[in-house]
Image (cartoon, rainbow, N blue to C red; front, side):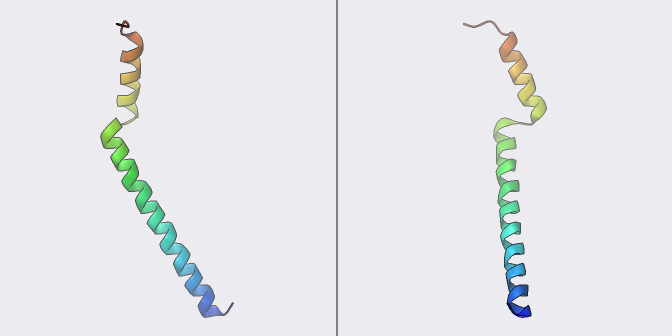
Length: 54
């Protein structure tokens, strides 16, 4: 590979990694809004465990 081709490959990989990280952060934001944070999930699980089954 020439220097130019190698540089272009590096730039392409950086763009792909940036795109995937952006999508991951967006998905985690949606999951947080839908399910809450770790404390909310722990509290929900604790209340569910303690509540009598109907």
